[in-house]
Length: 67
Ligand code: SF4
Ligand code: SF4
Image (cartoon, rainbow, N blue to C red):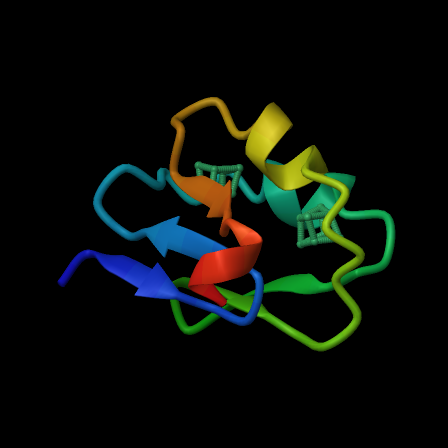
């Protein structure tokens, strides 16, 4: 299981190169890099910035119906 569901996003630990761009572009600091993983904290406004700026297609905002 490489696609790890978070609250609003799905993170792919294999594709992710730990550049932390997603952490930096998130406008509400809902993402963090902890113990070699991207984790999601409460507060995501589903703006899709993380998905848009990730260079490795490693983070994706989940569809509403999958939450
Ligand atoms: S932007 Fe993409 S590759 Fe970079 S840390 Fe975030 S999920 Fe990983
Ligand atoms: S969708 Fe927006 S608010 Fe939610 S984690 Fe990604 S960048 Fe942050």
